[in-house]
Image (cartoon, rainbow, N blue to C red; front, side, top):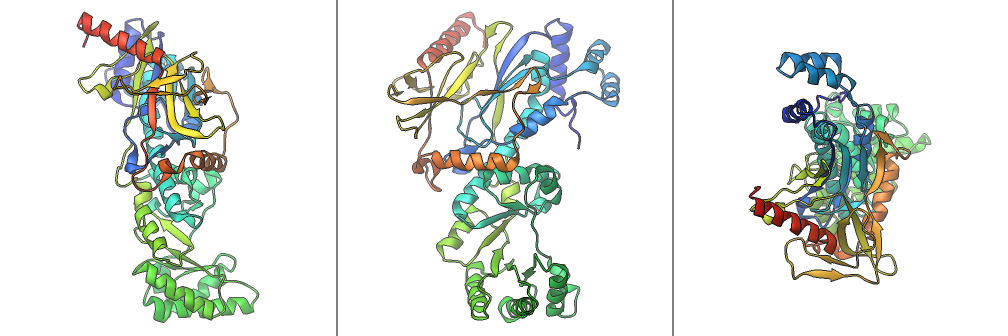
Length: 470
Protein backbone atom coordinates (compact mmCIF):
# COMPACT_ATOMS: atom_id res chain seq x y z
CA UNK A 1 0.00 0.00 0.00
CA UNK A 2 1.39 3.39 -0.98
CA UNK A 3 0.78 5.85 1.82
CA UNK A 4 -0.28 9.31 0.66
CA UNK A 5 -1.65 12.53 2.13
CA UNK A 6 -5.11 11.09 2.65
CA UNK A 7 -3.75 8.47 5.06
CA UNK A 8 -5.09 10.68 7.82
CA UNK A 9 -8.21 11.45 9.82
CA UNK A 10 -10.85 13.69 8.28
CA UNK A 11 -10.54 16.24 11.06
CA UNK A 12 -6.87 16.84 10.25
CA UNK A 13 -7.91 18.08 6.82
CA UNK A 14 -10.87 20.01 8.23
CA UNK A 15 -8.58 21.88 10.64
CA UNK A 16 -6.00 22.42 7.92
CA UNK A 17 -8.62 23.98 5.68
CA UNK A 18 -9.72 26.27 8.49
CA UNK A 19 -6.12 27.40 9.06
CA UNK A 20 -5.68 27.97 5.33
CA UNK A 21 -8.85 29.99 4.82
CA UNK A 22 -8.06 32.12 7.88
CA UNK A 23 -4.60 32.92 6.56
CA UNK A 24 -2.82 30.99 9.32
CA UNK A 25 -1.67 27.98 7.33
CA UNK A 26 2.00 29.01 7.23
CA UNK A 27 2.36 29.71 10.94
CA UNK A 28 5.09 27.63 12.55
CA UNK A 29 4.14 24.99 15.08
CA UNK A 30 5.87 22.50 17.37
CA UNK A 31 4.22 19.20 18.30
CA UNK A 32 5.51 16.54 20.69
CA UNK A 33 4.90 12.81 20.37
CA UNK A 34 4.90 10.89 23.65
CA UNK A 35 2.96 8.16 25.45
CA UNK A 36 1.48 8.12 28.95
CA UNK A 37 1.69 4.48 30.06
CA UNK A 38 4.18 1.66 29.53
CA UNK A 39 2.64 -1.37 27.82
CA UNK A 40 2.54 -4.90 29.31
CA UNK A 41 3.69 -3.74 32.76
CA UNK A 42 7.17 -3.51 31.28
CA UNK A 43 9.89 -1.35 32.82
CA UNK A 44 10.60 0.32 29.46
CA UNK A 45 9.38 0.56 25.88
CA UNK A 46 11.46 0.08 22.72
CA UNK A 47 11.06 2.97 20.29
CA UNK A 48 10.41 1.72 16.74
CA UNK A 49 9.00 3.01 13.46
CA UNK A 50 11.15 6.12 12.92
CA UNK A 51 12.80 5.01 9.66
CA UNK A 52 9.41 3.95 8.29
CA UNK A 53 8.01 7.40 9.10
CA UNK A 54 10.93 9.24 7.50
CA UNK A 55 10.66 7.12 4.34
CA UNK A 56 7.01 8.06 3.96
CA UNK A 57 7.40 11.75 4.80
CA UNK A 58 10.07 12.28 2.14
CA UNK A 59 7.58 11.32 -0.58
CA UNK A 60 4.24 12.31 0.98
CA UNK A 61 1.81 13.95 -1.46
CA UNK A 62 -1.81 13.97 -2.63
CA UNK A 63 -2.76 12.23 -5.88
CA UNK A 64 -5.10 13.72 -8.48
CA UNK A 65 -7.81 11.19 -7.60
CA UNK A 66 -7.53 12.09 -3.92
CA UNK A 67 -7.82 15.80 -4.66
CA UNK A 68 -10.89 15.13 -6.81
CA UNK A 69 -12.39 13.15 -3.94
CA UNK A 70 -11.84 16.03 -1.51
CA UNK A 71 -13.52 18.53 -3.88
CA UNK A 72 -16.47 16.19 -4.35
CA UNK A 73 -16.82 15.81 -0.60
CA UNK A 74 -17.18 19.44 0.33
CA UNK A 75 -13.64 20.72 0.78
CA UNK A 76 -12.96 24.26 -0.43
CA UNK A 77 -11.58 24.44 -3.99
CA UNK A 78 -8.80 26.88 -3.05
CA UNK A 79 -7.67 24.66 -0.21
CA UNK A 80 -7.68 21.56 -2.41
CA UNK A 81 -5.69 23.42 -5.06
CA UNK A 82 -3.20 24.32 -2.34
CA UNK A 83 -2.75 20.62 -1.58
CA UNK A 84 -1.64 19.95 -5.17
CA UNK A 85 1.87 20.99 -4.25
CA UNK A 86 1.83 19.62 -0.70
CA UNK A 87 5.14 18.29 0.58
CA UNK A 88 6.38 17.90 4.12
CA UNK A 89 9.09 20.56 4.54
CA UNK A 90 9.46 20.53 8.31
CA UNK A 91 12.11 19.42 10.79
CA UNK A 92 11.95 16.35 12.99
CA UNK A 93 13.93 15.81 16.17
CA UNK A 94 13.83 12.28 17.50
CA UNK A 95 15.10 9.75 19.94
CA UNK A 96 17.23 7.17 18.13
CA UNK A 97 15.15 4.25 16.89
CA UNK A 98 15.67 1.21 19.09
CA UNK A 99 16.36 3.19 22.26
CA UNK A 100 14.53 2.64 25.54
CA UNK A 101 11.79 5.23 26.03
CA UNK A 102 9.52 6.08 28.93
CA UNK A 103 6.15 7.74 29.61
CA UNK A 104 5.43 11.50 29.41
CA UNK A 105 8.76 12.58 27.90
CA UNK A 106 8.90 13.70 24.25
CA UNK A 107 10.06 10.87 21.99
CA UNK A 108 9.71 12.82 18.72
CA UNK A 109 9.28 16.56 18.11
CA UNK A 110 7.88 17.96 14.86
CA UNK A 111 8.59 21.54 13.73
CA UNK A 112 6.59 22.52 10.64
CA UNK A 113 3.84 24.74 9.34
CA UNK A 114 0.62 24.14 11.25
CA UNK A 115 -0.97 22.50 8.17
CA UNK A 116 1.93 20.14 7.57
CA UNK A 117 2.12 19.21 11.24
CA UNK A 118 -1.61 18.47 11.39
CA UNK A 119 -1.72 16.40 8.21
CA UNK A 120 1.08 14.07 9.36
CA UNK A 121 -0.28 13.58 12.91
CA UNK A 122 -2.41 10.50 12.27
CA UNK A 123 0.27 8.91 10.10
CA UNK A 124 2.93 9.47 12.77
CA UNK A 125 0.77 8.06 15.55
CA UNK A 126 -0.29 5.08 13.47
CA UNK A 127 3.28 4.06 12.67
CA UNK A 128 5.11 4.87 15.90
CA UNK A 129 2.45 3.59 18.31
CA UNK A 130 2.16 0.23 16.56
CA UNK A 131 5.82 -0.51 15.94
CA UNK A 132 6.84 0.62 19.43
CA UNK A 133 4.21 -1.66 20.94
CA UNK A 134 5.40 -4.69 18.95
CA UNK A 135 9.10 -3.99 19.52
CA UNK A 136 8.43 -3.76 23.26
CA UNK A 137 6.55 -7.07 23.21
CA UNK A 138 9.40 -8.65 21.25
CA UNK A 139 11.95 -7.32 23.74
CA UNK A 140 10.08 -8.94 26.62
CA UNK A 141 10.10 -12.24 24.75
CA UNK A 142 13.81 -11.89 24.10
CA UNK A 143 14.25 -11.34 27.83
CA UNK A 144 12.39 -14.61 28.51
CA UNK A 145 14.08 -16.61 25.75
CA UNK A 146 17.65 -15.75 26.69
CA UNK A 147 19.96 -16.84 23.86
CA UNK A 148 17.38 -19.12 22.18
CA UNK A 149 16.20 -18.36 18.65
CA UNK A 150 12.97 -16.37 18.25
CA UNK A 151 11.00 -16.40 14.99
CA UNK A 152 7.95 -14.26 14.14
CA UNK A 153 5.15 -16.61 13.03
CA UNK A 154 2.38 -14.02 13.35
CA UNK A 155 1.45 -13.03 9.80
CA UNK A 156 -1.73 -15.10 9.59
CA UNK A 157 -3.03 -13.78 12.92
CA UNK A 158 -2.08 -10.12 12.51
CA UNK A 159 -4.52 -7.32 11.77
CA UNK A 160 -4.26 -7.53 7.97
CA UNK A 161 -1.18 -5.80 6.54
CA UNK A 162 -0.02 -4.74 10.00
CA UNK A 163 1.91 -8.03 9.83
CA UNK A 164 4.39 -6.33 7.50
CA UNK A 165 5.52 -3.73 10.03
CA UNK A 166 5.11 -6.12 12.95
CA UNK A 167 7.88 -8.25 11.44
CA UNK A 168 10.15 -5.21 11.23
CA UNK A 169 9.43 -4.16 14.82
CA UNK A 170 9.94 -7.71 16.10
CA UNK A 171 13.50 -7.76 14.75
CA UNK A 172 14.23 -4.41 16.43
CA UNK A 173 12.91 -5.84 19.69
CA UNK A 174 15.23 -8.84 19.52
CA UNK A 175 13.72 -11.51 17.23
CA UNK A 176 16.01 -13.41 14.86
CA UNK A 177 13.78 -14.03 11.84
CA UNK A 178 10.27 -13.85 10.40
CA UNK A 179 8.03 -16.15 8.41
CA UNK A 180 6.86 -13.10 6.42
CA UNK A 181 8.67 -13.36 3.09
CA UNK A 182 7.69 -9.87 1.89
CA UNK A 183 9.00 -8.29 5.09
CA UNK A 184 12.14 -10.40 4.81
CA UNK A 185 12.83 -9.08 1.30
CA UNK A 186 11.98 -5.43 1.91
CA UNK A 187 13.70 -5.08 5.30
CA UNK A 188 16.60 -7.45 4.52
CA UNK A 189 15.88 -9.65 7.53
CA UNK A 190 16.10 -13.47 7.69
CA UNK A 191 12.99 -15.32 6.52
CA UNK A 192 12.33 -18.74 8.03
CA UNK A 193 9.68 -21.45 7.89
CA UNK A 194 9.09 -25.18 8.23
CA UNK A 195 6.04 -27.11 6.99
CA UNK A 196 2.29 -27.36 7.76
CA UNK A 197 0.28 -30.36 8.90
CA UNK A 198 -1.45 -30.36 5.52
CA UNK A 199 1.79 -31.42 3.83
CA UNK A 200 2.03 -34.49 6.05
CA UNK A 201 -1.68 -35.25 5.65
CA UNK A 202 -1.41 -35.12 1.86
CA UNK A 203 0.65 -38.34 1.92
CA UNK A 204 -0.59 -41.80 2.86
CA UNK A 205 2.33 -42.27 5.26
CA UNK A 206 4.00 -39.71 7.48
CA UNK A 207 7.47 -40.98 6.69
CA UNK A 208 6.85 -40.56 2.96
CA UNK A 209 5.91 -36.92 3.58
CA UNK A 210 9.11 -36.41 5.57
CA UNK A 211 11.26 -38.11 2.93
CA UNK A 212 9.73 -36.02 0.15
CA UNK A 213 10.24 -32.78 2.08
CA UNK A 214 13.85 -33.67 2.92
CA UNK A 215 14.53 -34.28 -0.76
CA UNK A 216 13.11 -30.88 -1.68
CA UNK A 217 14.78 -29.02 1.23
CA UNK A 218 18.09 -30.82 1.85
CA UNK A 219 19.81 -27.75 3.33
CA UNK A 220 16.94 -26.42 5.43
CA UNK A 221 14.82 -29.38 6.49
CA UNK A 222 12.68 -28.98 9.64
CA UNK A 223 10.01 -31.66 10.10
CA UNK A 224 6.69 -31.09 11.88
CA UNK A 225 6.31 -34.15 14.10
CA UNK A 226 2.92 -33.82 15.84
CA UNK A 227 0.44 -34.56 13.04
CA UNK A 228 -0.44 -38.03 14.35
CA UNK A 229 1.57 -39.07 17.42
CA UNK A 230 4.63 -37.05 18.39
CA UNK A 231 6.66 -39.64 20.30
CA UNK A 232 5.42 -42.88 18.70
CA UNK A 233 5.35 -41.71 15.09
CA UNK A 234 6.60 -38.20 14.41
CA UNK A 235 9.96 -38.23 16.18
CA UNK A 236 10.87 -41.84 15.20
CA UNK A 237 10.09 -41.07 11.55
CA UNK A 238 12.12 -37.85 11.74
CA UNK A 239 15.03 -39.82 13.20
CA UNK A 240 14.88 -42.30 10.31
CA UNK A 241 14.94 -39.43 7.79
CA UNK A 242 17.75 -37.77 9.71
CA UNK A 243 19.87 -40.91 9.48
CA UNK A 244 19.14 -41.22 5.75
CA UNK A 245 20.23 -37.62 5.24
CA UNK A 246 23.44 -38.19 7.21
CA UNK A 247 24.35 -41.18 5.04
CA UNK A 248 23.97 -38.99 1.96
CA UNK A 249 26.24 -36.34 3.44
CA UNK A 250 23.37 -34.08 4.44
CA UNK A 251 21.86 -33.09 7.77
CA UNK A 252 18.41 -32.83 9.32
CA UNK A 253 18.18 -29.27 10.63
CA UNK A 254 15.36 -29.69 13.14
CA UNK A 255 11.95 -30.89 14.24
CA UNK A 256 8.99 -28.77 15.32
CA UNK A 257 6.45 -29.34 18.09
CA UNK A 258 3.14 -27.54 17.65
CA UNK A 259 0.85 -29.07 20.28
CA UNK A 260 0.72 -30.92 23.55
CA UNK A 261 2.94 -30.58 26.62
CA UNK A 262 5.85 -28.78 24.99
CA UNK A 263 8.15 -29.16 27.99
CA UNK A 264 7.64 -32.93 28.32
CA UNK A 265 7.66 -33.59 24.59
CA UNK A 266 10.81 -31.57 24.02
CA UNK A 267 12.68 -33.44 26.76
CA UNK A 268 11.60 -36.83 25.42
CA UNK A 269 12.36 -35.85 21.83
CA UNK A 270 15.80 -34.62 22.85
CA UNK A 271 16.58 -37.98 24.49
CA UNK A 272 15.43 -39.87 21.41
CA UNK A 273 17.45 -37.69 19.02
CA UNK A 274 20.60 -37.88 21.15
CA UNK A 275 20.34 -41.66 21.53
CA UNK A 276 19.93 -41.96 17.75
CA UNK A 277 23.17 -40.07 17.18
CA UNK A 278 21.48 -36.82 16.11
CA UNK A 279 22.51 -34.38 18.87
CA UNK A 280 22.77 -31.42 16.48
CA UNK A 281 19.13 -31.59 15.38
CA UNK A 282 17.36 -28.55 16.84
CA UNK A 283 13.94 -28.62 18.48
CA UNK A 284 11.53 -25.81 17.61
CA UNK A 285 8.22 -25.16 19.34
CA UNK A 286 5.14 -23.10 18.51
CA UNK A 287 1.48 -22.95 19.64
CA UNK A 288 0.19 -19.81 21.38
CA UNK A 289 3.50 -18.83 22.95
CA UNK A 290 4.14 -15.54 24.73
CA UNK A 291 6.82 -14.25 27.09
CA UNK A 292 5.19 -15.88 30.12
CA UNK A 293 4.91 -19.30 28.49
CA UNK A 294 8.46 -19.08 27.16
CA UNK A 295 9.75 -18.18 30.62
CA UNK A 296 7.80 -21.06 32.14
CA UNK A 297 9.14 -23.54 29.59
CA UNK A 298 12.71 -22.48 30.24
CA UNK A 299 12.15 -22.62 34.01
CA UNK A 300 10.95 -26.22 33.52
CA UNK A 301 14.12 -27.12 31.66
CA UNK A 302 12.41 -27.63 28.31
CA UNK A 303 14.82 -28.68 25.57
CA UNK A 304 13.63 -26.10 23.07
CA UNK A 305 16.13 -24.30 20.83
CA UNK A 306 13.74 -22.23 18.72
CA UNK A 307 10.50 -20.49 19.68
CA UNK A 308 8.00 -19.56 16.95
CA UNK A 309 5.67 -16.85 18.24
CA UNK A 310 2.54 -15.62 16.47
CA UNK A 311 -0.64 -14.08 17.83
CA UNK A 312 0.58 -12.58 21.08
CA UNK A 313 3.51 -10.88 19.33
CA UNK A 314 1.83 -9.24 16.36
CA UNK A 315 -1.26 -8.12 18.30
CA UNK A 316 0.72 -6.76 21.25
CA UNK A 317 -1.24 -8.72 23.84
CA UNK A 318 -2.53 -7.88 26.36
CA UNK A 319 -2.46 -4.14 25.56
CA UNK A 320 -3.35 -4.14 21.84
CA UNK A 321 -2.37 -0.46 21.47
CA UNK A 322 0.15 2.04 22.78
CA UNK A 323 -1.50 5.23 24.06
CA UNK A 324 0.84 7.59 22.21
CA UNK A 325 -0.36 11.16 21.69
CA UNK A 326 0.71 14.21 19.67
CA UNK A 327 0.32 17.53 21.42
CA UNK A 328 0.90 21.16 20.42
CA UNK A 329 3.69 22.83 22.41
CA UNK A 330 4.38 26.04 20.47
CA UNK A 331 2.70 27.97 17.64
CA UNK A 332 2.50 31.45 16.16
CA UNK A 333 5.39 32.60 18.32
CA UNK A 334 3.86 31.53 21.64
CA UNK A 335 4.15 28.51 23.99
CA UNK A 336 0.97 26.42 24.11
CA UNK A 337 -0.46 24.20 26.83
CA UNK A 338 -3.44 21.91 27.29
CA UNK A 339 -5.01 22.03 30.74
CA UNK A 340 -7.01 19.23 32.31
CA UNK A 341 -8.77 18.34 35.51
CA UNK A 342 -6.52 15.26 35.41
CA UNK A 343 -3.21 16.89 36.24
CA UNK A 344 -1.21 14.10 34.59
CA UNK A 345 -2.76 15.17 31.26
CA UNK A 346 -1.50 18.76 31.44
CA UNK A 347 0.96 19.09 28.54
CA UNK A 348 4.40 20.69 28.45
CA UNK A 349 4.87 23.96 26.51
CA UNK A 350 7.83 25.19 24.44
CA UNK A 351 10.42 23.39 22.33
CA UNK A 352 12.31 20.95 24.54
CA UNK A 353 15.27 18.65 24.90
CA UNK A 354 15.39 15.39 26.85
CA UNK A 355 18.54 14.27 28.67
CA UNK A 356 19.37 10.78 29.92
CA UNK A 357 21.10 11.03 33.28
CA UNK A 358 24.18 8.84 33.76
CA UNK A 359 26.63 8.50 36.62
CA UNK A 360 30.25 9.60 36.35
CA UNK A 361 31.09 6.25 34.69
CA UNK A 362 28.43 6.65 32.00
CA UNK A 363 25.93 4.18 33.46
CA UNK A 364 22.26 5.29 33.32
CA UNK A 365 20.87 5.98 36.81
CA UNK A 366 17.23 5.43 35.79
CA UNK A 367 16.13 8.99 35.03
CA UNK A 368 15.43 11.27 32.05
CA UNK A 369 15.02 15.02 32.52
CA UNK A 370 12.95 17.19 30.18
CA UNK A 371 14.43 20.66 29.73
CA UNK A 372 13.87 23.77 27.65
CA UNK A 373 15.46 23.76 24.19
CA UNK A 374 18.90 25.31 24.51
CA UNK A 375 19.09 24.67 28.22
CA UNK A 376 22.43 23.08 29.02
CA UNK A 377 23.31 20.77 31.88
CA UNK A 378 20.42 21.20 34.33
CA UNK A 379 21.67 19.93 37.70
CA UNK A 380 18.29 19.02 39.13
CA UNK A 381 14.95 17.66 38.04
CA UNK A 382 11.60 18.05 39.77
CA UNK A 383 8.58 15.76 39.65
CA UNK A 384 5.99 16.90 37.07
CA UNK A 385 3.14 16.66 39.62
CA UNK A 386 4.57 16.63 43.14
CA UNK A 387 6.50 19.77 43.99
CA UNK A 388 8.35 18.26 46.95
CA UNK A 389 9.98 15.48 44.92
CA UNK A 390 13.25 16.25 43.17
CA UNK A 391 16.51 14.60 42.14
CA UNK A 392 19.88 16.33 42.09
CA UNK A 393 22.63 15.12 39.72
CA UNK A 394 25.48 17.59 39.87
CA UNK A 395 28.18 14.97 39.29
CA UNK A 396 26.35 13.13 36.54
CA UNK A 397 26.62 13.05 32.76
CA UNK A 398 23.68 14.22 30.63
CA UNK A 399 23.10 12.66 27.21
CA UNK A 400 20.82 14.70 24.87
CA UNK A 401 18.32 12.30 23.30
CA UNK A 402 16.41 14.38 20.73
CA UNK A 403 18.55 14.75 17.61
CA UNK A 404 17.74 16.33 14.24
CA UNK A 405 16.83 13.50 11.85
CA UNK A 406 14.93 15.44 9.16
CA UNK A 407 15.53 19.01 8.01
CA UNK A 408 13.32 20.82 5.52
CA UNK A 409 11.62 17.53 4.72
CA UNK A 410 14.82 15.62 3.96
CA UNK A 411 16.83 13.12 5.99
CA UNK A 412 20.03 14.43 7.49
CA UNK A 413 21.66 11.04 7.95
CA UNK A 414 21.96 7.76 6.06
CA UNK A 415 19.06 5.38 6.40
CA UNK A 416 19.67 2.68 9.01
CA UNK A 417 18.98 -0.97 8.26
CA UNK A 418 16.73 -2.92 10.60
CA UNK A 419 19.52 -5.19 11.81
CA UNK A 420 21.64 -2.13 12.64
CA UNK A 421 18.78 -0.68 14.70
CA UNK A 422 18.30 -4.04 16.43
CA UNK A 423 21.97 -4.14 17.40
CA UNK A 424 21.78 -0.60 18.78
CA UNK A 425 18.62 -1.47 20.71
CA UNK A 426 20.26 -4.50 22.30
CA UNK A 427 23.10 -2.30 23.51
CA UNK A 428 20.83 0.47 24.84
CA UNK A 429 18.41 -1.84 26.62
CA UNK A 430 21.32 -3.81 28.03
CA UNK A 431 22.81 -0.61 29.47
CA UNK A 432 19.78 -0.05 31.71
CA UNK A 433 20.20 -1.18 35.31
CA UNK A 434 18.80 -4.67 35.86
CA UNK A 435 15.96 -3.49 38.11
CA UNK A 436 14.39 -1.63 35.16
CA UNK A 437 14.71 -4.61 32.81
CA UNK A 438 13.45 -7.41 35.02
CA UNK A 439 10.43 -9.37 33.91
CA UNK A 440 8.17 -8.82 36.94
CA UNK A 441 7.67 -5.67 39.02
CA UNK A 442 10.40 -3.54 37.46
CA UNK A 443 11.52 -0.30 39.10
CA UNK A 444 9.70 2.81 37.93
CA UNK A 445 11.97 4.90 35.73
CA UNK A 446 12.00 8.55 36.81
CA UNK A 447 10.94 11.32 34.45
CA UNK A 448 11.29 14.90 35.67
CA UNK A 449 11.34 18.52 34.55
CA UNK A 450 14.15 21.01 34.77
CA UNK A 451 13.39 23.84 37.15
CA UNK A 452 13.28 26.28 34.23
CA UNK A 453 10.73 24.22 32.25
CA UNK A 454 8.59 23.66 35.33
CA UNK A 455 8.64 27.38 36.00
CA UNK A 456 7.51 28.14 32.44
CA UNK A 457 4.76 25.53 32.62
CA UNK A 458 3.45 26.79 35.98
CA UNK A 459 3.52 30.38 34.74
CA UNK A 460 1.47 29.46 31.66
CA UNK A 461 -1.02 27.50 33.74
CA UNK A 462 -1.55 30.50 35.99
CA UNK A 463 -1.97 32.86 33.04
CA UNK A 464 -4.66 30.69 31.49
CA UNK A 465 -6.51 30.20 34.76
CA UNK A 466 -6.54 33.94 35.46
CA UNK A 467 -7.85 34.71 31.99
CA UNK A 468 -10.50 31.99 32.19
CA UNK A 469 -9.17 30.09 29.18
CA UNK A 470 -10.11 26.49 29.84
